[in-house]
Length: 400
Image (tube, rainbow, N blue to C red; front, side, top):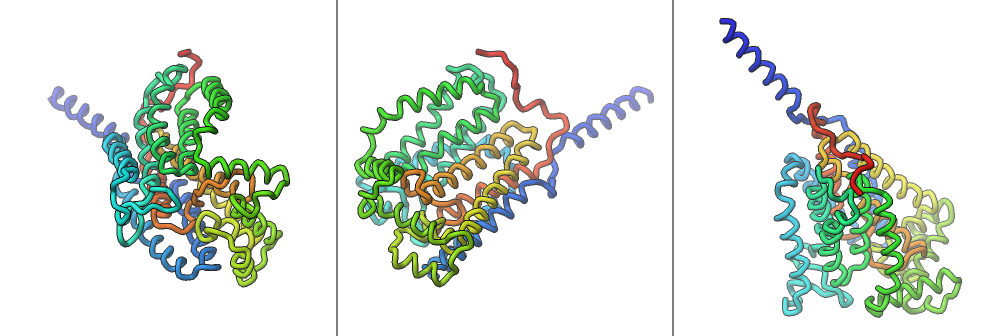
């Protein structure tokens, strides 16, 4: 009896240990801050688009419903399954990035716009593979970095860099300079979260900045022209205000016209139309917000992005699973970097790159992608941390 009792006791302890360490849904979590911010930004986007394009605003609402369904699906299955599928997901997305670049694919399938091949015609909407490439890249990099130590050495950073430059290069060839600019900030944020040595990252940054001028001859003519236009614009020289710098000049004009409190809907619509601002419902929607609601509107927009960023970082901080933590950090870094680039080009401190403002700009691919990232952030937050999990990362001084 004593042996049976001991065996029964050991079985009971094992069951209790499994119960303690079993993942459970944690409904109260900071991921909901991301959802609240995403919803506020999406509604702001619909209202802003309606300033000059009511028809597009109605379509954006339909895209929002689809995006919300996608976010719900992204929370339904435990995010750890993405680790197991990270390789196939990345390969599939790279295949799509290659597909849009194949020159003999009919225009009815891959729709060129202004010389760029980025969109696949799905008939009900245009699908942009580079939008999902951002998510696939974060998933793949988070899967690679979990529990690894080699990136604590300088040459151990080479493989993450190679993994980064494959999708970055394909997106750049489309060409889509704006989206391509998101990969490196995301890489650095995830490496910092994983415990890479800051001195190594600083060294890579210095090398990259030193090599940047050598990349200038490789840019396409319109990309060089936009950089030149920004250079003269920062000097106060308006020589390009009527050609390549027209969009940036009009965006800054409308931002300034909004003042502190904005000019209201009707006057903002008239100003946007009469100034002939290109892509006011898409890339330049932040100029419409600043004109209609002034500095208060701009600060409210930035505030909601900061709320989303804070919620995502809190989600990462409470997650003991290294994959989940890196996934959250990577997604937040991607969204935040995109916001900085878009608003920076609108107010005239960065070159025009044709990148959308997440959640706010018109477009089905962009909106669905942003909400999928939000759903994954909530997914990480909803899964209760494991009590018996090993430490996610080591931040020691070893490993040169």
